[in-house]
Image (cartoon, rainbow, N blue to C red):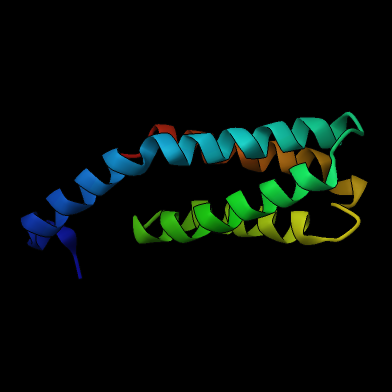
Length: 110
């Protein structure tokens, strides 16, 4: 369904976006912090689990708003942070890049 054909749906989605925007940005901050901690070799299990959970929640909500790229990025982060021993070091830059791209997608959504 195209929301442009249903202005009331578009308005409702915009209200929901405004309501959840601060929470989504906080989740991205958690992911960016986890990436920094990982790169510094200081990511705790609690921080890894928090990052995984935030990535999971972002993947769902971004799909609701049609941000497929955001959902894909968040799912990848969720998968990487789901590894019991943490992400493989080869993915260190990917963690940073995905968090940064998520921030841009959410901040500049139009």
